[in-house]
Image 1 (tube, protein in one colour):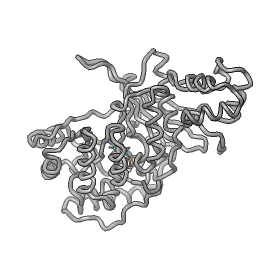
Image 2 (cartoon, protein in one colour; image 1 turned 45 degrees about the vertical axis):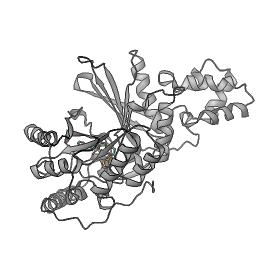
Image 3 (spheres, protein in one colour; image 1 turned 135 degrees about the horizontal axis):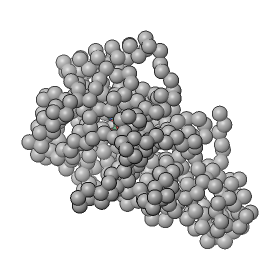
Image 4 (tube, protein in one colour; image 1 turned 90 degrees about the horizontal axis):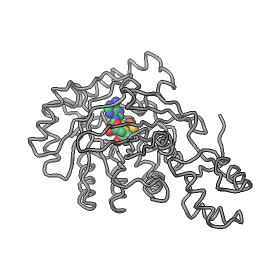
Length: 395
Ligand code: SAH
Ligand code: SF4
């Protein structure tokens, strides 16, 4: 495994790039040329291809920076070409994933190309229905590693004369536990001189890191905030989103509500439907009571089948009944189809495959523990396990 000490070029701010150009003794317009070369249509990954620059400057660029930080990107296609799941290798050998989803134009809605990106390699939160959660925490991604996933997708789209229309931070990792880099990445994605995607087309999803949500609120509207709720009752959410033991449902929803008030932007709640676990009438009513009257919208997502859980997606009629309870209470609700199941589009699955199969007894113990924990949660008993450690650092 090699690590490359050169920073990723796309991680530089305009000022940092200008300072580098100046330090080379070059005129300031060179910074603009370099910026265009790496951002336009996803840009280039080779300094030698930046033909607008004189040879010696191309050499200096190559000496001081990596023009790309995601490598050997392996693409798997599903859904008749509508979903492209990509496994990227980073310089230190860590694996991350991004997923590009194409939505053809339908009726009045224009075609969309949505990219789901990762903010960390692995994740410390450890939600038991999530393949990334099972992998555990690897490390925070650098800002360049985050935006280079978007540049990679933009280059692929550009070959068909298409552009990325939406970016969602719903890949591997908990974005609010790597918030400084995620904010820097969003700034670059949003900047008309760099990636140039409107803030309304960027969504960041969090499992409920309350101090991170409050920090975002203080900054004002930056993007759409999605909260992964998955349960309205603490006993059950303790099991499904272990961070709940640190920041319980009421605190998460309070922070989300304050965010909606302060920014005027609607909160999206994600709710993965797990058969017999969080899809009962009791859960639907608890969720309806929790969100009634809020500036919020709920997305119900059938659980993607992942290895090593005792659970499956709720049957569609159950999801429809659950949605009806929410709609009846005036809570906006959409049932979302999941994509790319045959290529393992629940993020973390490809990386988990590469990590190899854990020993059978460990898998059996994990299943048994989850069955017992969810049964106790359904009886309303709260977990006594401690909250996961914040490996990604305090927000
Ligand atoms: N860590 C952040 C963002 C990445 S996960 C978060 O949890 O919000 C993005 C979304 O995928 C979350 O809503 C997560 O709960 C959901 N998810 C993870 N595994 C899933 C699975 N097997 N089926 C359906 N959704 C899943
Ligand atoms: Fe982490 Fe999100 Fe997966 Fe939970 S669902 S383990 S927070 S990536």
